Length: 315
Picture 1 (tube, one colour):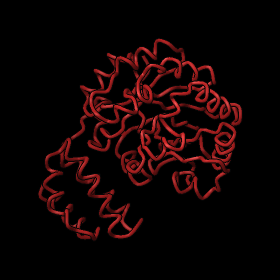
Picture 2: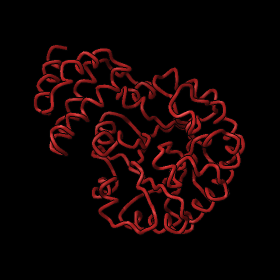
Picture 3: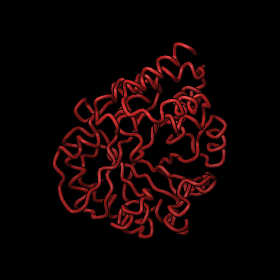
Picture 4: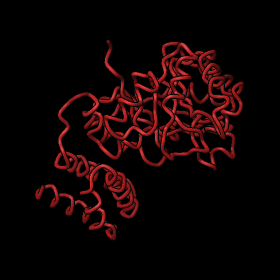
């Protein structure tokens, strides 16, 4: 049996270049997907692609060599296709199409999960991109079970398949369900049975036992990890059956992130990013909550690093 594929999910405002770099440094991912590049009626200049996917400047790979697929979000088939061609010209090794974003601002402008109310449009966008880029470039789709409900889930999955997508990733909730547990892995399984293209399961995978249940209920071997990967940078190793370590193994990951991200924005912005990650880590590691309490009023990354380094030495 082939090895399970593990993919780092695109997460707007969370899994940016710096987080992708850190997580793939310490986790054996098959590939990761960029935050979405929003397409709204024009051919975007290269600088926009580089902004959301800086890895394009380094062969579309993270520092560890993990491939980065570029994600596009839009509803105009011609415009999305033109931007896909540009992304490929800049080095994108694969194009992923976003039909899952639940953000209200995106949905109001006919982007993301709201398009799941229009399976014919999902097909046209996917087909246009598939026809526009070279056949050697995979085109994939990420979707939710639906917008308000999952009544069109099968129709959307079949539309994606008919359009020539290489694989389909399904987040096991509708837009209305947001990120509230549970994720309906069994409904992903129904979609997997309705199509012949590979299906990757996503949603609510925080621990190895979640991954196993997801595989059992969905029938999908391959998994995309999102917030669970941020909450536990060692999750991939656990899923690979390796000795993953404890909090003392997480601290160096966090210190490395601080070193990398320092200088990428204002001190306040960088401090906010560090606190954001500690906030996610609290779900898996109580020690992260203690650190967050210690640094919550700090606005200088160097101050935060001192506290983290002291914690590492004391661990």
